[in-house]
Length: 140
Image (cartoon, rainbow, N blue to C red; front, side, top):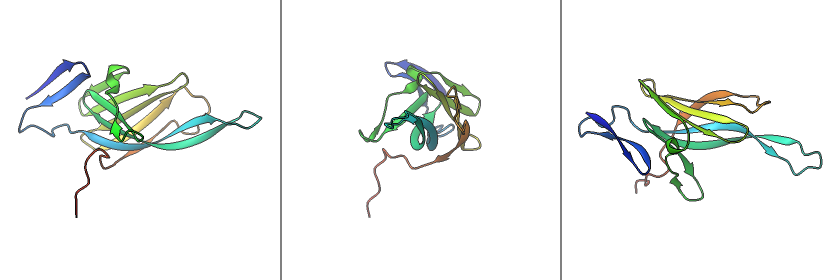
């Protein structure tokens, strides 16, 4: 049995004992393109591809903050999140681009899509499952 509960951090999925993992939390690394303004006199923007780590499940979407060594708050509170059948998606956006990051729970495949930023050579791609950086590493 599963139930959605609302709290100050947004929606959290609560799984009853014995049913945990039916739609598990996925940690994925996505290589997302973005433009960074250049300090050059011409002011041209440089295309950068950076690895970003996300934790996603039904009703929860978080990005890893390397400087703080932890996942940030649930982005579903501020941005759109969707849970349809075996798929969970979350979005993040800026003034010029919206990224959607998702997981197909049954197939285990992660993906990203970008909408808005003109000139991006890539507008979609695969994300790879990765180890949870917030989990302690096992000792020897």
